[in-house]
Length: 276
Figure 1 (cartoon, helix red, strand yellow):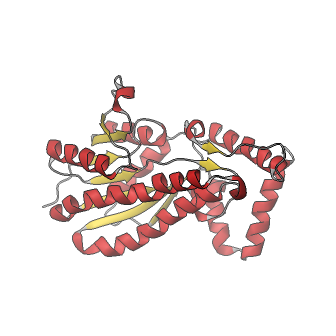
Figure 2: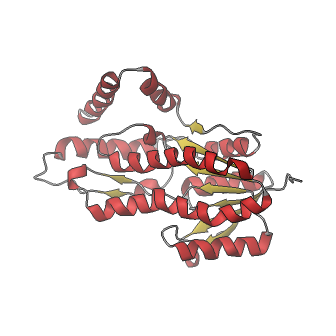
């Protein structure tokens, strides 16, 4: 018999959107565990319990999930939130940084899912929420690697839903737009090179990207949406949360011919380039 008691694991829970989600769910009475790569750096963290986990290290994932299950003997909700940002012209972005981004944003979440599936199958219940991005619905200039990593997570969620449906496990994606967090501080920026053919446009867009984050919404809105999804009997495959214009941009891609939509993105980029 399924209980209403919910044990939640949030990867990347020590800061940003992950922390906001954890704080909101804790206030709502859920038992929340977050993860961080270095527990020693968060000795004064009191919002909820943190576990040490690096999503790029499978053994670290196994230890953290094992520690949680030793304490709770169940896991109801996994929120795959850990992620990194990256910007730059593809031509000038080191392959090492591309691989790091896909390791954290795509391979990492898959390895966490692999670690929790056996317990969720045993329970015949579980909900996995993959935090993606509205940017994952479109190829944005100078953000293509980030868009691709999040888009890949959206697509594989669709596959995993069908693979795990017989085990009482549900999967869904939540794609946030821009929220006021510290993501820009940890993002890899390909340098704006003096002799680069991309210098002017990339430099302008880079400033605009950081400004959009600084002026973004309250990350508590993401926690509120997560809480709604957890209490939805049959979650949809895809959810979005963010400013109306950002959510409309996804709809427009479905409605407009490809070349029209591309022109809109180029026009938006040109506005950034002109300082508008």
